Image (cartoon, rainbow, N blue to C red):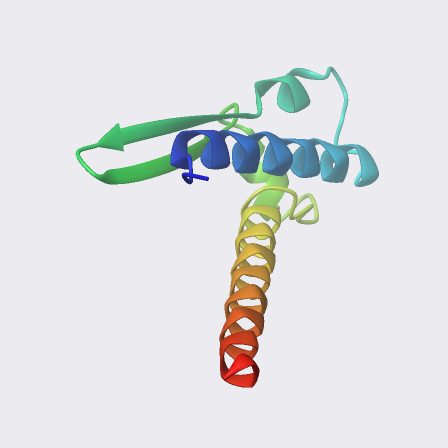
Length: 106
């Protein structure tokens, strides 16, 4: 079975978007719904490289990081970073498991 990077990244983007929206709801960072509805991602391919970009309405960064008047809600950058870290850990665990299987099958 051939690995499909487009499909993988779109799945990663959708899953991460859902986590961001869930965190916005959990943090009660909703007044109008504009922030929640503005969360989006875009997958771009250039040659053999891929980039996934997440975005939101401009004022979302103030809600995410906080100001001197409001506490940070940490629903955007932290959720994206944590999701990438979790994915990396999963990939490394699976790679290690495959290598151990090779060693013990010999």
